[in-house]
Amino acid sequence: MFAVFLLTGCAGNDVDLNSMGAEELYNQAHVYLEETRYKKSAETFEKVELEYPYSRWATDAKIMAAYAYYKNEDYDDAIMALDRFIRFHPGNANAAYAYYLKAMCYYEQISDVNRGQGEARRALEAFAQLTARFPNSKYAADARQKMLLARDNLAGKEMEVGRYYLNRKNYLSALNRFSAVVADYSRTGYIEEALYRQAEIYTILGLPQEAAAAYQVLSYNYPQSDWTAKAAKIVNRKKGK
Image (cartoon, rainbow, N blue to C red; front, side, top):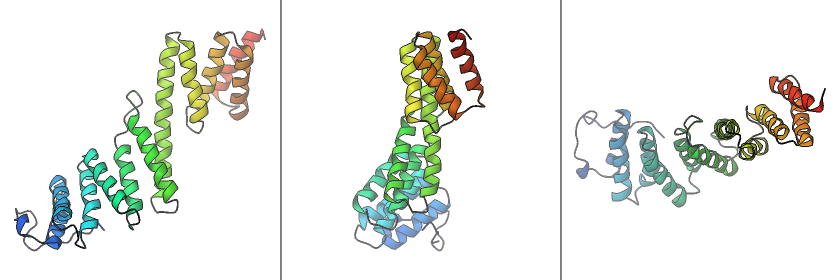
């Protein structure tokens, strides 16, 4: 759908968009897209939709405008355009792509774990919508892979905050964060440390049974982990072994 329909003599030149019909505008928007003039491309696609809403080009123009906004990193505008497309064309052949592109708008904004993770949560939710509604679409496999990274970012943020509280001896707040990782993000790369931190904090709080339970889960699932070895020293030392 992203093939460029070149207009003779238009590429690279200013043209009079107001004199164009629906098909000409649609093709010119593709020219702008090819020239990486993404903002202009998006505006021209939207002009098709606004001025020729009943033309054969209007529906595709909606999602193409969103794509152009996405390429320009105008993610809020892209999301608004995609929401309109999804709302008015839920059965369209490009509906799965619309869900995917919306999720990608959030995904591209996922920052490192030292910053807020709102975009990671929204990306995860959007990818989950895609895989639930279109489990067999060509975008589903990539969505599932990106969901893993989004979860890893969210788990990393929980761990970062948990360590912050632990370093300040705010043990209950730290425990809540590490326990959230164990409960909600058990398939991320942070699970081993989270279980260790549970054992560590339970030991500090004088709760040996809870510490032993966390260690048991850690040692059963990750017997060769360095975190398991560290937890064993803590739990066994407390037992006097």
